[in-house]
Image 1: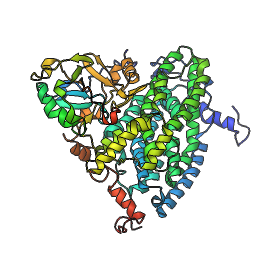
Image 2: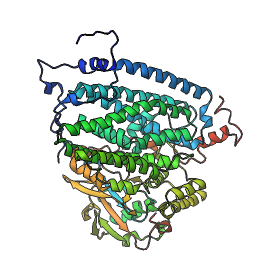
Image 3: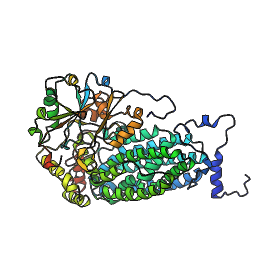
Image 4: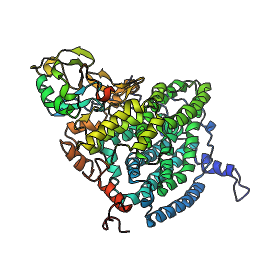
Length: 511
Length: 119
């Protein structure tokens, strides 16, 4: 192509800086250059059909992101200089950040690695460039999230060692194993898992709760990160939908493979989001909306429209969707009472919801809260008042697939656990649900290797045989500072002194 | 099914009994008592008697529940891995089929948790 104008138009620029960077190999076979492209059974007949809706090129990317981040860091600086942490709604809110920083930010980093890897594995240049671009986004998000929250680390406990905790702490194996599962799959399953199921179908249930939660609770640093990431997230969502439509349009044999991946990754994502459900309903002092409302809006309505749209490709809504829909009435309450009883082993605090919060939940969960969950808190409050704040002193059974304690209940039977078990090659395995057992049955060799935190402690691989040793030495959770009940914790006392409820503690917050 | 992979995908299970230093895992589920959010995961000696399991492990584990004092676990209804099971209190666990990663379910009729809502 001869270049007439010095300044290229957008279309030409995209052509030159992406598609034209590729070439047809002459002395190596294409299969040898892209060895991971075929083994999953996905058939791509024509990569040129790949449409990149954004047509973003690297030069524009750097310029645009640099401008955004300059503004972002100016706000972080202002937040720190003005002691922005003193203006949040309540220090209980910071526990949502602890969960985010140890549970979600490391996933951004895992996504960076995942996209960098698949960005090498496709023979189509358009897909490679889109994945490489998203890879850099994810790395930036991981970094900017840590910077957004680092100010809190100077004033509150539990934020000091998030990546270390992510690799070791029992409940953080839930997000970690989710991404390890995706990254250990082939490139097309990775895209179906992360770009489509996670970034497209379920992302609003992760980012809206955390970012709106930040806005409702006066956390300017985190909400500014949210705004800054929004344009990237929009691009990721669009890529997610493009990916799935492209694969489905390429060959009809791809349809059953994609359907199975959608079933699997919808369910794995739903289990992962159970952590978000309790964050929304319990950890935000100023509440955005209930988990049930968020699920209805972002999954039942938006997801419903999406799967209607995908029907023409032969795709149906995910298997076990009805179980997830039914669970919206119970999920957050079951999760919070679980973390309440295992607060000795978490890097954040838990507490009994205040009276107004319980009334809010009665209103948001009219069928279930007063019947099943209010009695729990009334009992726990009585125990705490009598000096017996409840901690469960045994370890829980974990699901072999999602790694959440097997705490979930049967659809329509909220007092009965939906436990399943099976024997594979002479070994027994236990699951939280039929859906997780299904995932195991399809690829048992993958899940028999699961690094289940409870079993690892019992095998003696976690630097101690009692919970206190494991928590302090292996998890790096500082006992008496990071963990246990919120009321009376150092964070709570510090917050009271900031708010002048007790005489100010000069050492703690001199700035 | 087998894992679709680029190589012969074969791995050892992570939780084989030999990795537990002579001990074994046992799960115990007490339905209608969700104050304990999930079945207990316990580390037990395979030759421990059923009576010792109840006295030394299950009783301390369930102690925080007001129903625990009223429960007669030895006389309760038991299931082993989903099948009806009659424990022999003075026999060892492994001798009566309670092997590694087995799950015992114990139902205590009349005890339905705090406020009778299975908690």
